[in-house]
Length: 178
Image 1: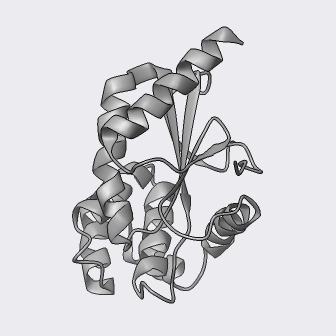
Image 2: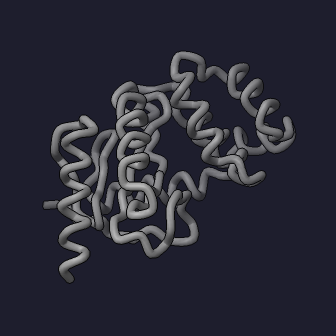
């Protein structure tokens, strides 16, 4: 079983309480159709587990396969600068077929990200964070997206809500016993 080499911290985008007994980390690519499918699965398990689950998203743009993935990640980071990372995250997954730069400009306007900040992002102002996420993924054995880790252990089960929820509940049970 592959282990997560870097625990979620202040540099990560996190939903949920820091002391939640179960942490789910996703390495994702906003243009990846499998990540798009996983988006709904993760929303379902978040609703089911509520405050018992902490979710962290890390960028792993597969730019050779997905030409819009890097700019989408850069847009999400720019949105994060104005407290809208999760709004951007959701908008990108809910509109995966519309990730051109023109689309990202529209989303930025809607979220209150200035054109100057978006242009700066497209010029690489957030690439250090994206690269940090990507490198931590490589060190943890990530070679595709989505890749999930539950309490530091790679999840290789079925990519449906029922299977993931079962694995998360097992992790919750194990966390309560220790």
